[in-house]
Amino acid sequence: MKFIKTLLFVVIATLFTSAIKAQSIGDYIDVVFLKNGSIIKGIIIEQVPGQTLRIQTNDGSQFVYQISEIEKYGRELKPGMTANTASASKPAPREPRVPKPFFTKEKGYFGDVTFLGGAGMGFRVTNGYKFGRFGYLGMAVGFEGLSTSNRNNYFGNPMPLDGMPGMGGDRSPFATANVIYAGDILNKKVTPFYQLELGYGMNLMPNQTRYYSYYDDVTGMYNNYSYQVRSIGGPMGGVAFGVKFNTRKRVNFKLALDARWHTNITDPINSRPGFNNGSDVNLDGGTGIRFSIGF
Image (cartoon, rainbow, N blue to C red; front, top):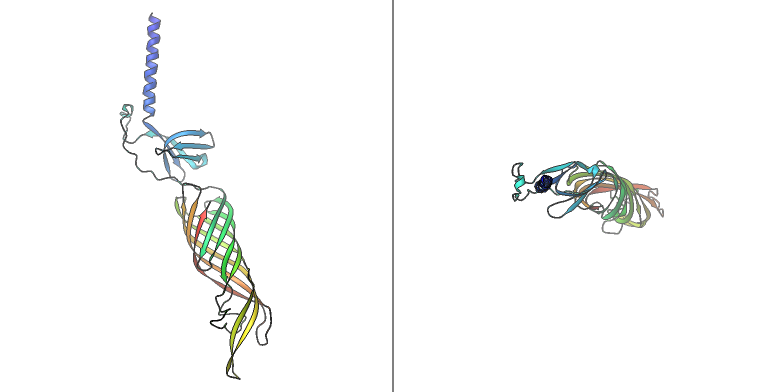
C-alpha cells in the first residue's frame, strides 16, 4: 500500500513538472541573428545540422537560411515577460517592428537585364559569377543605338552638311559585348554599388552615305559631295554608380547614372580627289541612366 502511494506521488509530480516546463517554453521565442545585421524572431521549426535552419515568424512567414549566413541563434522571453512572471503566461504586448530580412548571395552565379538610356538607348543581358561582395565578374551582351560620326573630325574633310542625311550625330544599331566588374559597397538591403565595363561594339548597318558642302574659292560657289563609307564599330567602355535594392525574394533592382564612351572605325568605300581617303577613328560618348533587374 505504501509503495502504491509513493508511485502515485511520483506520477503526479512528474506531470505537474512537465506542465510547468511546457508553459515556460511557451513564454519564450527563438531569435536568429544574421551576419548582415538582421534579427529574425519566431519559432525554429526545422534544422538540418551544418546546412540550413528554418524559422517561422508571427505572421506565418517562413524563412530558410544557410548556416554560413547565421551569426548565432538562441531563445529569449517574449516582450513584456520577466523571469518571475514567465510561468504565469500573461498576454504579451505586440512585438516591436523588426526589419524584414533580405536575400543576397555570398557567392554564386548571377544574371540581370539592364535597360540603357541617354548616351545610347538599348538593353543588355548579363551573366557571371559573384566571388564576394566586392567582386562580380560577368559578360554583358546587347543591342544599343550609338552615334557613328563626329562633327569635329571626319576624315579631315569638310564638315557634313547640316540638314542632310549623314550629318554629325547619326545613330546606328550596334551589337555590343562587354566584360563587367561590379561590387556592392554595403551588405545591406539598400546599398550603393559600382560597375566598370570594357568591350566592343559592332555596327549592324555599316554602309552609309555622307554629304558635304565645300566652298570653291575659284568659282565662288558651294559644291555638294556625297561620300560612301563603311562604319565598322570599335572598342567601348564605361563606368556606373548607383543604388541597389535587395528584396526578400531572389530578385534585386538597380538604378544608376553612368558615363559611356565608344569608338567607330570608318573606312571609305569610294575615293574622291582632294579628300582624305584613309580610315579614321571617331570617339563619342556621354552620360546616361540605367535600370536593372537582377536574379
